[in-house]
Amino acid sequence: MATTITRRQFGVLAAGGAAVASLGLDASQSAALETAAITWVSSDPHLSGNFAPVGPELDVPDLPVTAGQIPSDLRGAYMRNGPNPLYKPIAFAYPMDGDGMIHAVYFDNGRAHYRNRFVQTAGLTAERRVGHAIYGSFTHPVPIDPKLLQPGDPPGPFKNGAFISILQHGGKLLALDEATTAYEMTMDLDTLGEWKAGTDQPIRLGAHNRRHPQTGALFTLAYSPLRPVVDFHQIDATGNVARSFSIALAAPTMIHDFVLTEQHIVLFACPAVFDAEAARQGQPFLQWRPDLGTRIGLIALDGSATQWVDADPFFVFHFANAFERSGQIVVDYVRHDALVLGYSAQVHKPPTLHRMTIDIAAGKTSDVEVAALVTEFPRVNDALNALPTRFVYLPTLTDTLLQANPPSATFNTMMRIDSETGDVVRHDFGNKIAGEATFIPRGTAGEDDGILAVFAFDPVTEASDLVLLDAAHVDSDPVAVIRLPQRVPQGLHGNWMQTA
Image 1 (cartoon, rainbow, N blue to C red):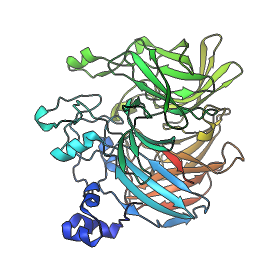
Image 2: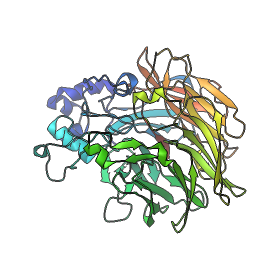
Image 3: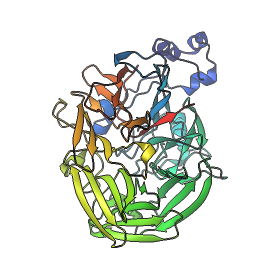
Image 4: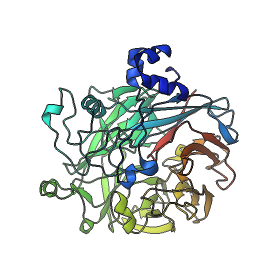
């Protein structure tokens, strides 16, 4: 276990060598921690307010519980990743850029312990050496002055920030980016390096990967911005690559997420395509081309066969789940009319939860809007991934949040939506900003037998809490509200890491 650094000790640590020695830390430990607050500011709404990054890396035990009680049998860690650029970006497009910062709350015997750390990627290491940002944006690449690079530095033009999610598989903890290599972490959030999955080279995988309910194999996806192909790995339960294959696409396509059933990989190739020629002419590298429509691939688990089904153009960042029933594939997902990155996403129809049914034999789809409520970041009970589910947990925005014209991906209410009936149960946090919920399983009493973990931020007091909700009774008082030692910015995805 790493040395515990309290908030009081934090200022001492920042003071320099003699003070560091007084804490019993050696030079390598002090150098590994970021101690200074981030002082740069940006007019970008997704780099301001609670989207603004934080610098301090803390390690604080015995967090105060301000309401309810932490269940004494809760053992494990809730970890959540998110874009947290250390240096002011040269170019930035939410949610595609940033440095990874993992915020973790560890539970044991009714007590909670907070730790956060940057993911020490090769790109961040190079920028720390230079002292400022040198890489551009995923959507707006910027050439790098070669004099700033040393042998082994990523050549750019953008970097792998490993900031989108954090996943546990095969005894490994993985910080994930978008269609590139993952960084392996320890449970104490030390960065070990790029993950090789039992091979001799780091493998590429995506931000979202799905585990098969029977075999325990992890299916991973990585698209290419330069080639019309998507690559899959099947990684066995021990964390080693068992099979790899590729699926051809009509054009280089951005595919952020996919779903799995017991018999199929379900791939939505929406018309968000990369165009290198357009980029050379000064236009965005990532283009929305609705004339291409959406193609849905039903892929055999071993990649041996693919059936394509055509649909109208739309975009999907995130799926909740998929499963097979009576010759059909049922998919719960959040549907966007188009791909628009950043603040301007508000000019389009808000994204909402949909359920699509795919008739496998007929090659036809039907689609219904489950609830006409703005949302994103859908989650289910992960123990039922690729199996039938009806409850989707996801946030929405209500008028109890007092912020005027908040940027996209700002929410203040957690919902449980029944995809079979459309029934909605809400927990309104009022004037607090909430993010994605992660389902923590408690038992086998039902699909909703568990706890939701949600970070919530109060813009008035600038305090952040971890709120635990009863997944079966989302509208009830919280199971527990845990005060965190610093602001936790709006992030992206997290998971529950079970410990023995």
